[in-house]
Amino acid sequence: MASEDVKAARDSAVEKIVNLAEEAKLAREEIKPTSHAVLSICKSLVAGGVAGGVSRTAVAPLERLKILLQVQNPHNIKYNGTIQGLKYIWRTEGFKGLFKGNGTNCARIVPNSAVKFFSYEQASKGILYLYRQQTGNGMSLPFKLYTGHGDHPLEEKMEDAQLTPLLRLGAGACAGIIAMSATYPMDMVRGRLTVQTENSPYQYRGMFHALSTVLREEGPRALYRGWTPSVIGVIPYVGLNFAVYESLKDWLVKTKPFGLVDNSELGVVTRLACGAAAGTVGQTVAYPLDVIRRRMQMVGWSHAASIVTGDGRSKAPLEYTGMIDAFRKTVKYEGVRALYKGLVPNSVKVVPSISIAFVAYEQVKDLLGVEIRISD
Image (cartoon, rainbow, N blue to C red; front, side):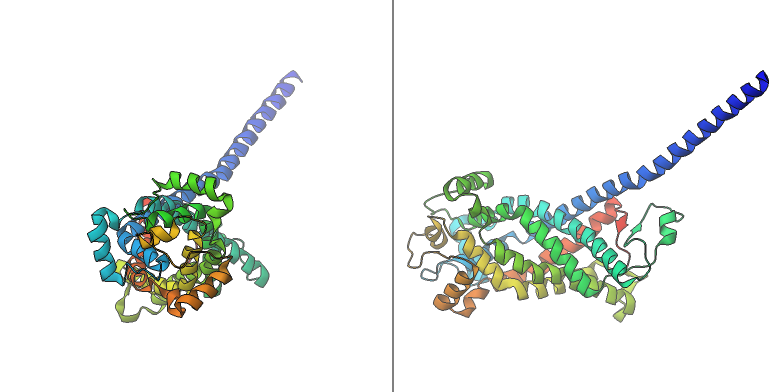
């Protein structure tokens, strides 16, 4: 009896050890995808940040000129066209003048782009998941979890998933609104820093000085002036950027026209062309809202007219009660063409800017080995 009790106790102990080992194994398998997902998220954020910083720095002179054209006082024109404007900045402010505000722009655009690209991927997954649930198109998850091995149980249950252009538009718009809202105060002070000249009667010394000054003199609401047209503009601008870019990529992979696609992979030049087309469509549709946003950001700034004109003369103070009022006054006093001031340098810059951003994002993702992505 004693030996049987010892044997039973031993078998029970062994069984417990085996069970504990199995539980530990299962726990590790549960934790592994989670930690893996966190790492992939961080990689996506880094890729988005690098893409935004590189693309904006490459076109910084055109970005500054665009903003100067958007908000300059119509009664004292200093910048009249792309070539003349760039020459004027060079002559009056030197090489550094071409990149004024670029530091603040990079500080803003890196987190903005990181959040935007990451939010797009997450919004795409969420929208596709809800869409699949509504349509009953049997799919357990809206994305594949890539582990580097072909035998992961999740991969066996996945089917190829694809976002329609309309769903991509929704995902892109969601990503743009989230990213823009998160960094809007930085964009607001960046606009003011960009239009300062050496002759301005009052100088912001940098991003943090501008933020604290606006907060102290104009209140916290001032940091979100122009937010409404920005949100409205995000829908066609960012939404169409992503929708057109992704749809063009899919079309090229499926049809393989003119031998542009090799083994279902797009080359760098083809990706640049897709990004250029996406950026052109988005910026053309949303541009008037961008002009109104910049003008609203100058409201409440006691030195706005002086800084914009550069010599202190002003006949039309920048005062708007809201987005509609800004549209009405701009068209009434300057005509419809005023809504497209700065469109030429913006068109010149948007092609390389958006193209470099998309290509840099995908290249950095490939370099870092990002393994969570939407199935194509």
